[in-house]
Length: 338
Ligand code: KG4
Ligand code: ZN
Image (cartoon, rainbow, N blue to C red):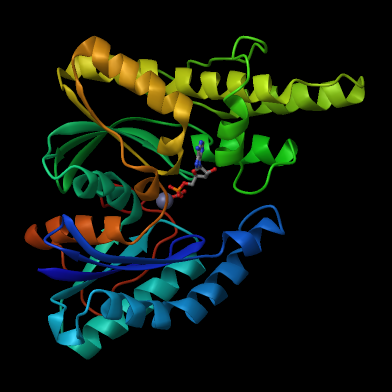
């Protein structure tokens, strides 16, 4: 089954064609990052406009690269939530129009379910059940992936997402948007014990996380150093920060594996590209004798191939939409409105 998949929830317009959930025939991305960088973050109105400008030719390009005509497409899939509402709407409307014109089924896909499914592309042998650490720009959670479309959230951030925190600290350090990758790079030669940053234990649920205290403490440290004219060791601050984020994530993942008995762990989302987090996850998995699935860097960030992968399983589960499909800025990964 060839699925034409569309992703437009943030600042990447993407169209892919994926066969049977695992085989990527083509994956086209038009990134807007350079444009938003001027403003230090995503400008929603510009994002929507850029999606409109890019999406038609990107879809043509995807068909051309896959050497398929419209008749070769069996269904259309689209990210319908969560994301910047104007941006998601562009993809949803294009998806509806394409499905209607081609007389094919329309499959709505939750963006975060898509991030998890990026692992199905990278690892053809991976099948649920498994645990997944989702760490993106807008979401941070530990998910029990019981089946392709059946999930349970074990814990989630109670405030900021890990990626948001990376971007804010990166911005204050004068790094280009989005700050995560630059901060990661700078941390490579730093001493992660040089700056002491807080580790929080929020709420009653031991799997829940919090990043706003860490973000505030790091920003305060930077501003205080500026005020007293102290030169910071930026690389060591970045290394200490990456260590603190990893400490909020990895011990909780260990606890989840120990308590559930699961020995399969996947990681998903843009922050899954972080080298410290990847390293700590690999060490923990090795200690527990667990199999670990880390998506290649190309599949960590937003793309449409992951949407096409998840769409196949949504279709098999009967999750097909009609022309009344709407876009949502927020929606739980479990499917119900929040
Ligand atoms: O999953 P994603 O592409 O978009 C959302 O769905 O939110 O994640 C983007 C986030 C940004 O916050 C970016 O700074 C972060 O992923 N990121 C990283 C790295 N590469 C991207 N954070 C830490 N280390 C990295 N190497
Ligand atoms: Zn994403």
